[in-house]
Image 1 (cartoon, rainbow, N blue to C red):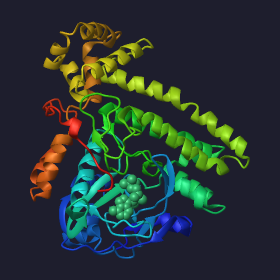
Image 2: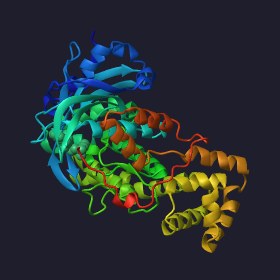
Image 3: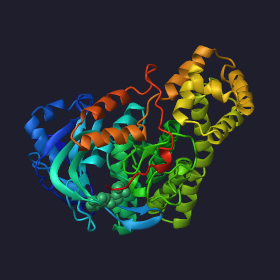
Image 4: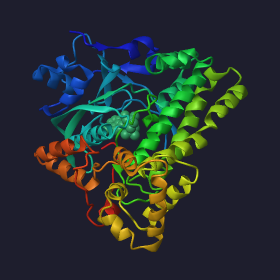
Length: 476
Ligand code: AMP
Ligand code: MG
């Protein structure tokens, strides 16, 4: 039965992909399968047979009439431009779902023409990690690629040590990246960029077809989507860790979970990635980097914005110039909601800035602070012994309920502040157990994270000093 479509390879020039079957793996075992995702998408029927599912999702067998590909792209990595592509992934095809057309991709499925010397494989550990964090992000209500399954293999993966192999099946609105546009502009021929532009608009933003300048229309909507995404990351303390332009999806979903992690103690300069020594992708620098990436996106679009480069630049600039004010507006609105300020006024910005400054100074746990503030918990009682904090607290009590009541304010806080997040120490604990053969703790954690705003959830206390020694890694 043919259930995968191939619009990407059929509608775009050959340059954008290479035909590539996944490479078979040894001793494939299905370790996680996301039943609720297939139900949500209305595609359970395709995965009704366990043996077929394992074959397809391990890469040991290609679905009938399928034409798997690896996608070509380029990107700015830590600011440097390079030609890239799916070095360890294949797109099996696109599934027709209740949410429209979505990509079904295997990650860790072997070498491709874009592997650049890499082994094309992924460790079981890192694919489980992507599964946990991406699904946790979804439960938090944040746009993200989804994880359909993790297969464990008997292949030996050589990193710092020998690891078990893993193949993740990933579902996303698409895998079109800012880097795909850079590839079209800088490695493509006449017409390639326009073909990608039209394909992207039709697939993701058909309303842009009514815009008098398609490329500018796309820039506008992508900027809005990206801004909303980053504001959401800041809301829950998420640090992506490697916001290279090839890891920024045009659909506005969080993709390419590598050295990502959630912040515990509030500090704007928090970085966990072992290679981000300059703090380029630090927690509070994410809005600036998104803006930088959007500028790269705009540059790639110049030829389709206007034939005259100067005119194109000017038109793009008019759109991009709106970012700083728009970001600041959305950021304060989000933070105001976390604080339960129902009717926000200009003056509340000071209150928010003061709060963030105090969290940093007093080294407060970002997630627990907002929950405890809503519950008037112990953490707040302790903080109020500090005169400066108590002064802030009293101002906050007045601000949150102007023209509203406490119940409305509490409801706003409950909606915007997760109680449970994927805490690093817990994530590492369940991953270790899973790698050692015990998957149950991971499944229990997933269950807990599937409802992160529930009031009954327990506060998670981070072992003292844990963050200081915590490091995350790319491409493991
Ligand atoms: P990332 O920053 O993790 O999204 O990866 C950057 C690039 O490196 C992408 O083009 C990946 O496909 C490629 N890559 C990462 N790990 C491997 C690997 N083990 N083998 C081949 N290519 C890889
Ligand atoms: Mg990537």
